Image 1 (tube, rainbow, N blue to C red):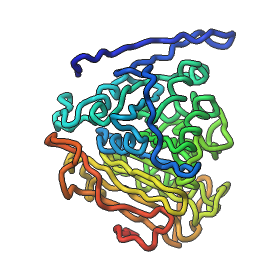
Image 2: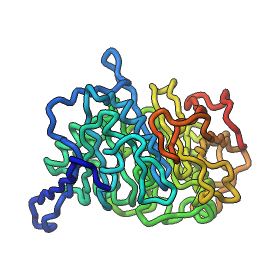
Image 3: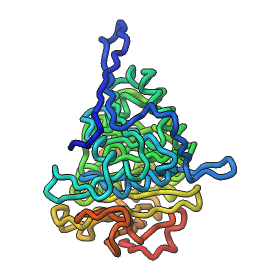
Length: 397
């Protein structure tokens, strides 16, 4: 994708070598002008010295343009203020730069579905910057910390969450992400990036796990949950990757519809609760959020009054499975009683009940931001995260 009068700039910063490892490079690229001195954007969630988080949890698959526009708006970015949108990842490319730094109504011609790009230029974004941070040393690099430290919005791309866990956990980079959350700066992620934003995270330190494996033995070696880490001898962290008050005692999961992950979310939530051997929280207070592909859960507000709403792409029949026929959905899971059996080497058994709510979004009117034929949109449905029982969304069980 080419933009008139714009150039893609790439620079690599070599880190100093030490006795343990050779020098590594941090790849940094951008579109726009990250060095502009006129950026004045301030998060809209801050008032009277207090800020609440703005968190975008994207479920993977093709990205949801409306989620990025929501982040831009929550960052207080306008044409008058400007703003820096920063992407961080451990592997991959700088493909988000032209996706975000684009014109409203512009179509992504690289996909057969003709989805629209974000339109960040017209919304006031002055630069989109991508950092590929692939080691713990790189997570301490001064250039990385400079770029992330001045960001007005931060997005963690997909990949392998084990990389994020091993490379970024308890580093200066992680501290800056935490500082951004506390300051009300919008922070989002997709796929592996989303997995790292709950208080608890499936860290995938030993690889992926499917629903049948997790349900048949919630303690098998593939179920590595940060900060439990009872199944791994790798780098051990005693606290969450990032502490988001509105995602306290919560674990997130993605690619829900295409990979049949409701069962494994049941196992994850059970493992964290004190109804399981080694559980660390009251089973009735642990929550799981599972998100379909091409779907984003947008969480704003203070704890106790936080609201979750959806931003979604148009219905995509390619994502349809027999178990998840309501597309563009998010699933909210809690246990109403301790599991009857949750111990190493045994199947998960629950006779006390599980609450599952589904929030689905379908278009009611065209996006106000786009004229593209496949626009994404904000769904009218929303969910109060602190009071599940009063919702009008669909309760499955």
